[in-house]
Length: 94
Image (cartoon, rainbow, N blue to C red; front, side, top):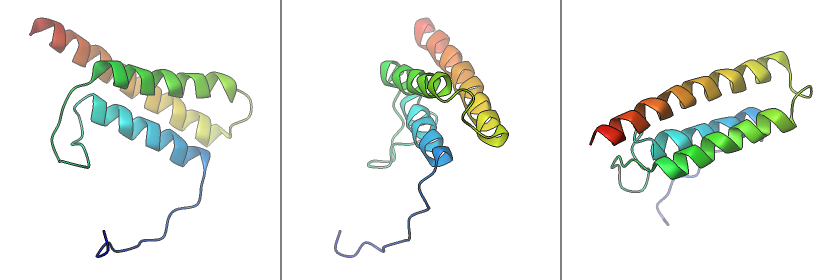
């Protein structure tokens, strides 16, 4: 870690929170390799929790997001829910 290159962090925003949760869901769906070991594993329960958390944010922030923020959240949730359904059906076939 001493050799780690420090990069500036992007400013905190609601979009970055959405992306953090969506990325975590993608990792848990096995769509993106885990950052620690670069392996893909499917953890449906954790993926569902990430997606449900985004859903809670959608409900709790209704009327307080810009149209761009709202559209982003809608699109992320739709995409993640479809991926979750596919992953669940593939898991049941195994």
